Image (cartoon, rainbow, N blue to C red):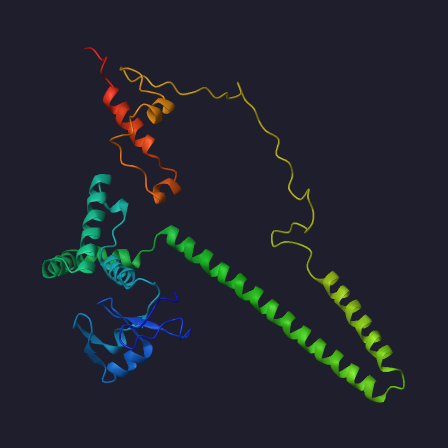
Length: 306
């Protein structure tokens, strides 16, 4: 995120941690100050692509890559109209073709491919499917309702926890202030030695901390007590029938056996195989895997007879 910068004023996130990048329909970003300066009259042109823009259409950039931001915005707008579900189609193939058309439209609009034709296609679809679009917008699926309920419940729990934590912080601040004022009063008006007064106050503060820690909750949100190893009941395995035992997989290729791994390494099979890069080796890929695959495909079916 520190590499993010405004293309006009060159301000970076590193120099200004409060930098806010804004994007419009074209997908090119500007910082908030440049937007206010360039679009003071409410409208203007993009500095990079010269597309006419309006000030009220700028929004806060959520992703680092402005291309992703642009694609996300276009996808949201398209899916408001192309909102059919799988149950609206007679077969899975028709539904998959529909999804492929949607992805093609999003890709074309994002990358500026056949813009006019794609826009006409979208407008034609909206005219021909007005009723279904309106019904699907009004109809919310059961899964979406459950998801919204879960999100609302989660937000309420987070808000309650935040209020509890803030109340605890305020209480501790007031308690520390009272202790400080009491210590100052004792040092000013008491006839006892200062070191004795300080030691007594430190002892009282430590005892109050112990009491407050004992009064704090000792259970998780699930109701299970903290520090209990036997909180969960042991699950007894249920075995029905014969216990599974592993046996190596036997591959019938109807052809000769391909060389083992050590022969592939030592007998020159890798001479014409591209070596794996450092990134590929980091992901677990080796050139010998490609060689083994090629040999399997070459030998497979050589002994097959009709």
